[in-house]
Amino acid sequence: MAATLIAVIFALALGHLVPGLAGAVRRHDLHARWLHWLAGIFPGPGGLFHGRAGILIALLPPLLVVALLQYALHSPLFGVLGLLFGLAVLFFSWGPRDLDADVGAVIDAENADARRDAIARLGADPARGGEGASMIEAVFASALRRWFGVLFWFLLLGASGALLYRLVALSAHEDAGDALSPAARDGAKRLHALLDWPVAQAMSLALALVGNFDTVLSAWRDAGGASLRLDNAFLAAAGRASVRSEIAEETSELIEEGVAPGNAWVQLGELPELRDAMSLVWRVLLLWLAILALFVVAGWVS
Image (cartoon, rainbow, N blue to C red):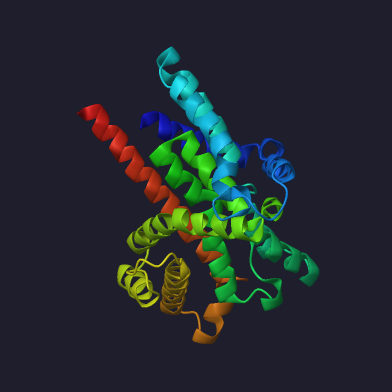
C-alpha cells in the first residue's frame, strides 16, 4: 500500500513538473498500431475478433505481459523494482494531457478561436460556446477518464489495472478504436462503462464529503446514482450541483463584505464555474490520497 501511494505521488509530480516527459512517454498510438495489426491478421466481418469479445482478444496479450512482470518484480530488491515498474505503467496510463493545463488554456484564451480550440481539447462541446454546465461536465468527465479511472484500478489491481483502464478507454472513445469492428467497438464501450461506474460512484461520494453533502446527495439520487445502470450521468449532475453551491457561497461572502449583488458575479472573475469545478476535482483527489495515506499509516501501526 505504501508503494502504491509513493507511485501515485511521483506520477502526479512528474506529470506537472516535467510535462515534456509526459508528452513523450504517453504515446498511446502504440495501442492503435496494435489494433490495426490484429485487424490485418483477422480479416473479414466474421470471427471472434470482430464480435463484441474482440476487445478482450486485443487486451489479453499486453495485460498478460504486464501482469507477469508485475508479479515477477514484486519481491526483488525489497519491492523497489516493483515500485519502479508500477510507477512507469501508472505514468504512461495517466492523462495523456494535464487536466490543469487544459482548464487553464480555456480560462486564459486570448480570443474566441483559441478558446474554442481549448474547449475542444478539454473534451467539451465547442458549439456550446463555453456554456457553464457543459464546461463543468467536461471537467468531471475528463477527471474521471484521465485521473480517477486509472488511479482506482491501479489501487485495486496494480500496474495491470491502470493499463487495463487506459487501453479500454482508448479502444472505446479514441481514434485507436477505429481499427475495431462496430461490434468490437461496442464491446469496448460497454467494458469502459463497466470500469467507469464504480469510479464515478467513489468520486460522487468524495465530492459530497468535500462539498455540500446534501446538495450533492440530492443531485446524485435524482440523476439515478442509486440505480445499477452503467450510466455516469449522476457524476455530471453531482458536479453541476456542487459547483452551483460553491458559487452561491462565494457570492454570499462577497455580498457580506459589502459588494453590491449586481457586482458580485463580476468579482468572481471569468468562467467561475470552470475554476470551481477544477478546484473540486483537486479536493476529491486529495481526499482519495488522504484516505490511502490513512490505510498506509494503519498498516504500519498494526
